[in-house]
Image 1: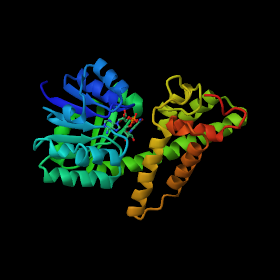
Image 2: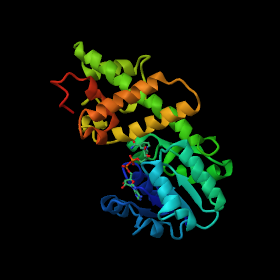
Image 3: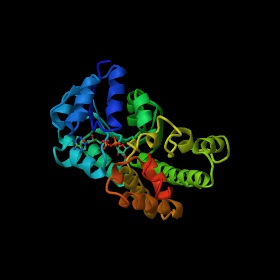
Image 4: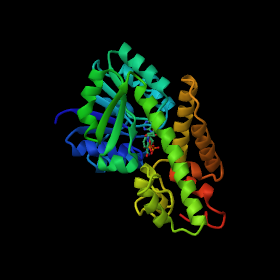
Length: 304
Ligand code: NAD
């Protein structure tokens, strides 16, 4: 495969995604502000670019996996302003989870430069990124999503087209609001069982095979020691940081406001994650399954 892809943002998600593109035969030029992340990408077979501008040189496709809408807009539109440097028809795939309004603004600016641009936030977590089993939720022109599809399928298993520019972000906001509610609800139920004398693993197995089953019980159990691979069994190392879940919940609450939707459970989940983050200076950087700690009695909540 001769196509060159520029990949910017090699964190918990992007590092594995770029490595999977290399495995699929693409030539990948990678860039991150963090030298450690860049070194890892180089070890995985990427070319380590010296700057964002160096990264995009000779690339037909640019992928970004960054933390916020401000960072994405800054990179593409302001400093260094990649949209001014890319050749017309370059495909820009932004996989970051950002506000739908940021993605729509980006798409308008891209169209003015004759670039092809889609929003393609992902679901599946760091395990999905590592195993190339992510789900991509795209917004933009159908032709551009079709062009991106083979590339996305090198990093994942499913590609959905939710609608026009920003629609991928709206679907992602709905999904992550539900995920936050599920995570908090699962932690709450597990703790009630444990406080009543049940074993967390036994209770998890029962609920996993009963009507309370959900993605959290299936893949991401928040109780320490139940799932050896889950962040809960590794001192809640991310994974998906509490501060990123709070960013997503803020996007969800904005989306609710714009669409005049009632989201009392989403709002309550946001308050719980805020309470978790403010309970300890390090918790913003912990995995979001650490919400379990909010429910644990004080004498046990230093575990995990
Ligand atoms: P992360 O903080 O681990 O990675 C972000 C990376 O971007 C960092 O390595 C950082 O150094 C780099 N970066 C920041 N600004 C940059 C710039 N201007 N130029 C180059 N590099 C820059 O975050 P993550 O967990 O990988 O998440 C990335 C995105 O994916 C977020 O939008 C998040 O909401 C979303 N997401 C994360 C998960 C998850 O489980 N972690 C799941 C789905 C979606």
